[in-house]
Length: 167
Image 1 (cartoon, rainbow, N blue to C red):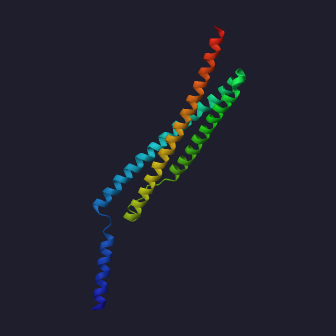
Image 2: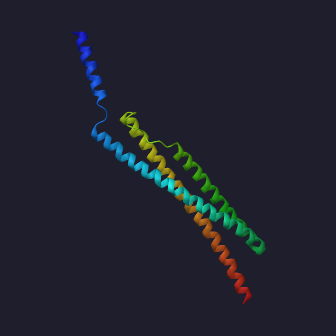
Image 3: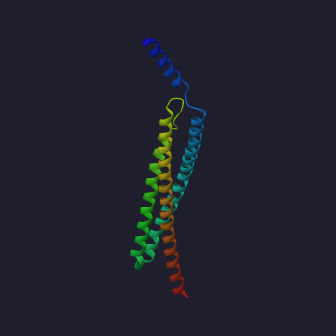
């Protein structure tokens, strides 16, 4: 009798485990997976923006060196703006490298090979990391745009002064 009970309980346990995730669990995983994949795609597409802005900064720094030679009295101000541009570019490249590395290692967990709880935990962690990446990307883009605007304003101001002196 005792052996029969143990055998029946063992079969029931196998039956429950063998059923796999429920339809509701599959839908939860599918929904969260779709959200995480969209976030990963958005992060991937943002990497091009980081590169584009880094290129603009490189051009501005090069132009800034010319401004410093042309306007030696404002060289300290120009140097300050160039330093901000270089810092912004470093931040852009750092964020790009971090996000690129994360995306390269990113793998969507598979419900067929992992337990439901582990899949959900992994997807939630991925979502948090992508949310952080999005914030870092936006912060780096904002800082770079602000540095470029500062450079453009300074250059325009210097050009305006030169034009006023010529009159």
